[in-house]
Each structure stands twice: as C-alpha cells, then as structure tokens.
Image (cartoon, rainbow, N blue to C red; front, side, top):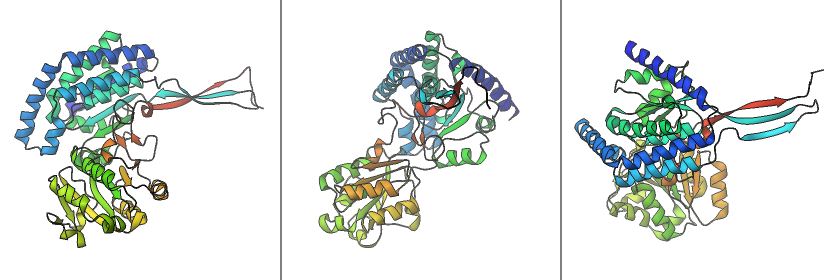
Amino acid sequence: MEDAGKLMQEIGAKAREAAAELAFAPAEAKRAALLAAADAVAAAVPAIIAANAEDLAFGAEKGLTPAMMDRLTLDDGRINGIVAGLRAIAEQPDPVGRVLAEWDRPTGLHIQRVATPLGVIGVIYESRPNVTADAGALCLKAGNAVILRGGSESFHSSRAIHACMVEGLRAAGLPEAAIQLVPTRDRAMVSAMLQAVAFIDVIVPRGGKGLVGLVQREARVPVFAHLEGICHIYADGAADLEKARRVVLNAKTRRTGICGAAECLLIDRAFYARHGAVLIEDLVKAGVEVRTEGELLAVPGTVQAVPEDFGREFLDMIIAAKLVDGVDGAIAHIRRYGSSHTESILTEDDAAAARFFQRLDSAILMRNASTQFADGGEFGMGAEIGIATGKMHARGPVGAEQLTSFKYLVTGDGTCRA
C-alpha cells in the first residue's frame, strides 16, 4: 500500500497540475484533441484487437461469466463505436463557461452563475475497456483531468486505447497528464484513489455491485454511482401488443450484461386477460429463463421464482416476471424492489403514463421504449461516464455537462454594502 500511496501522489500531483491548465483551455483545443484521439483509435484497430485478445484469454482463465466476457470483448464494430463517440463528444458545445443564470440586484451588482470544471475525476471500472475512451473524452470536454483505473481483465485493451487518447492530447498541445491510466493491476490503487481527497474531486465507479458497494463504503471522496441496474418493464392494460412484444424482447435480450437490461417484467392483469402469456412465451422462445410465480407458472418453460429474484440484477438471460394490478400495482412493486435506475411503461394510455412518470423517482423513466436506451450515447451525449442514481448534482447518464460545477461572477461599480 505504501507503493500505491506513493504512485497515487505522483499521479495525483500531475492531474492537479493538468486540471489547472485545462480549466481555461480553449474549446477548440479540446475539440482538436478528441478528433485526433478518434483518428488514432481508428488507425490502431489491429493493435487494439490484439491487446483485447490478451485480455480475453486472461478473462477466460479467470472464469469470467459470458456477460462479463461480452463486456470485455472489442471487435471492429465496437471500436468504430468508440471512434464515433469521440467524434460526437468533440463536436458537442463546450460545457465550460456557460452562463447558467444572471440577474441584477437593487444594490447595483450584476451576478452570473457560470459553469466550471469539477477538477480531477477518478474513474474506477471493471471489464469494459471502452470506458477508457468514454471517460477520458467526457472529462476532457468538461475541462477536467481524469485518473483512470481499469479492471485487471481489461488491462491491455485499456492501455492500447489510452495511448490513443494521449496521442490526441499531444497533437492539440494539451498536457498529457490530463488523461492518466493507472499503470498497474495492483488492487491497492483502488483504495489509494478512494482516500485521495487531496487530489481527486469526485470518484465514478463503473462495474458490478461488488465494486460499487466497495467504493460507496470506503470512499472519502464524493461518489457519482449506481449500485445496481434493477430495471423494470411494465406492460399496462392499454399497451399495444406488437410494440410490447418488440420492446420486452429487446430490453432483456439485446445485451444482458449492461446496467440498462430489463431484470423484471411486470404484466397488468388486464393485459394478461386480453393477450395471455405471449410476452413470457416470447422470452422463453428466445432462450430466457423466466422466473415467476402463481398462474404464470402454467406457461411452459417458466421456473418457480424465489423471493430474492424480485429486486435482483441478473445480468444474464434470466428475468423475473409477475402479474400486477394496474399501474398502481406496478408502481408499488418498483418502489419496493427497484434501484432507481431505469423503468419503462408500455401503454397507449396517456393518463397511465403520466401517473407512472409522476409517481416514480428513478433516474430514467421511459414510455414505449426499451430500457437498453439507458445510455449516454443514446441520449445524445456521445457517451456517458456512468449512470448516477443519487439525488445530488448529477442523475441519469453523466455526460460532459454533468461533469461541471459552477461559480458566481459578481460585478459592481465601486459598489459598497450599506
């Protein structure tokens, strides 16, 4: 831990110095750095895939689950997605220096509230190597320095992507320490980052419940995070059948290992009376293990649920399912078992949708849309550094704009207080 503490001091001091310079870096310089980084990633596809192959071998040896291996895997399409994300973030309006509000006082003072960078952000993540680019780009766009601590299983992929990010910084004449990657797999560096109040202004964990729980328990630095993505999808009595069938399948099966995957299907008894068990039959046919109770167990292929299956993040081809009495029954269930991440209502009834939106307080609420859209790229943010379910500062996808704070600029004219 002594070595980790020393390394943290070295990295932290460099990050603080870089953050001071980034706070007033021109918007065009940040844009140029991100575009150059995107070009570097595009040119390094073979090297990144070769590095990823080393990580996949390491992950297989560790016995990672199929969902975790999916998170770890990079291919041409996913690397093209990283490139597109970098370019999208580059072209976004600069969030720093925005005048959030301004007003005049009777005393003669003119007051502005102006967006400013947070400073230094620490990102601790597990198997998804694309976070190296997403987090680095978003922090840079918002004028922040970032310290990245990738998972041991994504070590080689993250290093290959990080090299491209540094190439972008160098091309734009920005400090290379603006985006630093912890150069060791030593887990002691996680604890060192969590205690580094002198160097890090906020920590963002990206990973499973174990990692996020550890960060929330031990961090002395403020944290943006969600503990679990227990996402619900509710088929209301007034749902359109074909829309519901498409959306439910997508919400569960598109990618099971992401935090926006649906983990519980709630079916209004009125929907069930009208359409039967078609939503569950579709899931079973697609290879999903449906854990349920009561009359839904009569559907071939379903499995008896235990109480713990409701309120569980499976991150696998498994879903809990339950009949509820209307929108209020769905709301009551979600309030009890949800994690305040993402919930979706499938309905053509405006009043039911309005009630669902008004009476639930999850970070993201959707209507007639798959929970898999709970992602910064799909929200037009280019990417996101994480999903925040807390109620302070940022909620939902955390993009560049959410990685700013603000200060007050007050102008007088020889103005004195009486």
